[in-house]
Each structure stands twice: as C-alpha cells, then as structure tokens.
Length: 110
Length: 111
Image (cartoon, rainbow over all chains, first blue to last red; front, top):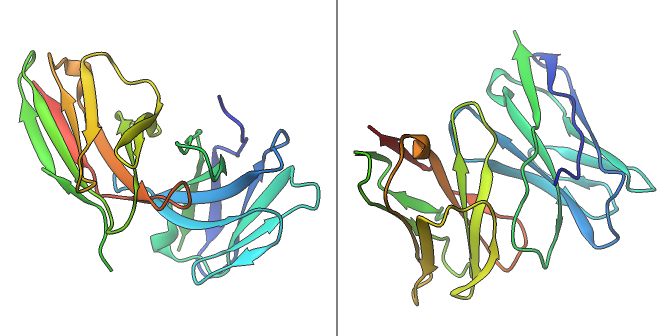
C-alpha cells in the first residue's frame, strides 16, 4: 500500500535547485524516509535517507519536517543528468522490502 | 566499489519456456531483493531473502520461485513464461535492511 504521496512531475532549470516534496503523513516512529531515483531503464539509485534529522551527502540534502509527516529532497544545482524519476519511500530498517510508489518525474531543462 | 551484478543482461525466451536470472550481491551484504518492472510501470517487489531464508514475499506469481545460496547469490526461476512476463527484473542487496543497492537489471523478452 502506498505510504507516500509525490507530485507526478516537475521541471527545473539547469543550475537551479530542485526541490522535490513528499508527503508521508502516516509514517511510524521507526520508519525512515529513503529517496531513490531511476534514470530511464537503469537500476534504481540510492540517494539519501533519514529518520528525523536533516541529512546531506554529496548528491543531495534531505529536509524532514519536525512532525515527520513530510520531507523535501533538494538537489542543489540540477544538471541534465539529474533528469529521472525520483521515489520517496518510507521503510523500517527491520523491514524486508522497499515499496516504490509512483514517484516524481523530474525534467531538468537547459 | 563492487556493485550488484546481474546476469544475463538480456534474455529472450519463447512462451512456456523457463528462465533463470542470477544476482550476485555486494560482498558482505546479507539481504537480496527481487523486483519486476513492466514497460512504463514502477518497480514491483517480488521477494526478498535474509541470510538465505525467504524474508518477505510480494506479488510473485506461483510460476516463479527464488532462492539464496550459501555464497549469498540468488536466482530467480521463472517457468511457463507468458508474454506478460516481459519486463526488467532488478535485484538489489543490502546489509540487513538498510539502504539497498540495485543492479542494472535483466531485460527479459518473451516471444
């Protein structure tokens, strides 16, 4: 069952920050927020995950609201190679699957 | 760094034939997941294994079976293939249930 809601599509100008929202209002206390992306027909690529604190790595930043009911993935300087479908997934680290919903198709425009 | 290896990358089979897909996880990863992705669809979870035991099952047809071996590689066996089985099949691995890393997939075409 879907536990996250994402906009189906977004555009972003090259070089600008891409902010991808995700709603997960029914998230449980032990569920993490994970982000993956899939570039056309390639294997999904892990981006970042977090529990309640904001996280940053070399690819992106993850901002989680204080009530944990929503989050935003930020790609600070989008490039054409960031065009992909981005999936927000809630997952408990004792769970045995990652459920992919419908994701957001991000198009980076030159 | 070593990644998840899937073989073959492409496979063409006829209806009613059998196919075996193989997955070699990242070294020291103990959990393997299998996903199916049809054309224009999102990845659908099939089955997962933790320490060589089945740990979760999704929408996997009864015609499909899978196992994880002592060296942690996994195989997905698909029998009585149907046209609708044509899809990308992804394997992923993780250390316990933390972030999973995906292979490049096997594209199965049933003709």
